[in-house]
Length: 357
Picture 1 (cartoon, rainbow, N blue to C red):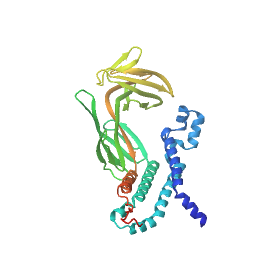
Picture 2 (spheres, rainbow, N blue to C red; picture 1 turned 90 degrees about the vertical axis):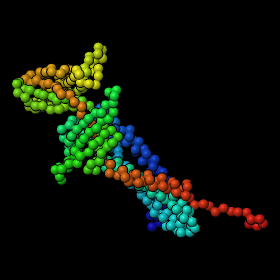
Picture 3 (cartoon, rainbow, N blue to C red; picture 1 turned 135 degrees about the horizontal axis):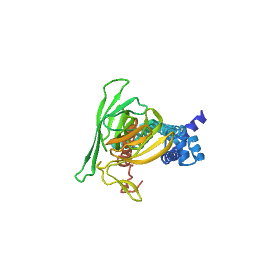
Picture 4 (cartoon, rainbow, N blue to C red; picture 1 turned 30 degrees about the vertical axis):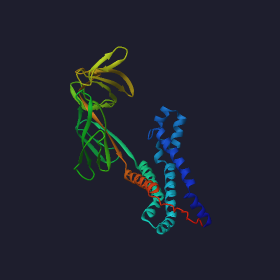
């Protein structure tokens, strides 16, 4: 029993809290420095085989979901909880002895601050452990699944608002999200930069834009396939899975600058140029720029790019415990206010005329 008391005293001590905070700060720093959720091959290519093995072995590739991050967070929350629970009875007794309402309220400053820190750490830790982030891009009319959520997003419209000097003022996407497993009716929203939308517990952010084009592939005289492909994406030939057309970049007003390569004179598609690459069985056969109306011929296949249009890139996040962390922050501010501005006044000793005391 005596040993248990010693253990509980240490767990609830300030010294243990400081140790945990230092370790937690180190874990968060590592999680911020090391790019998260990448494959072993990605780390090996960026660093080295040995470093990649170390990153994966120590779970640094997913630090905020690792066992040590969860353990540190749990002990820190336990430390704060025990600290508040242990102090509560004596705090209630002290409050009852105070004569003024100001003094009674002021006594609770430190306790409320501790509770706020507990909720803030709990909200941040649970938020990091359950945080999910997805990205979806496409043009109006396209639908795509949102990761592993079971939801499907349709892009209804996308527009780019320009200023008088032809610079971009705002990007706006109109979307509808469907929970197909539960209902055939979707929920619609409009989102723009700095104006996200909340649907099905997810937050949708208007991130950026880019160029897309329609790719037509014919085999002989017959139409084989047609698809809208975004710059930076690729299209696998329907009946030749080992033949891939990669859409590298788009130049709205194409010009070839000597010594520099392809460039664009303006942002308007007045002389569109499509930079493409062709891969066969994983090996690049060639790269070139295809102008509007030109046709790329590969054996019996002919490839043509047309109809350039802007696509929208939408970032999707799930932060289930943001409100808990927010509540913790509010309590911390309230606790500090009570501690520094409503704290109990200490009794002042006054000297009497006879100075007898």
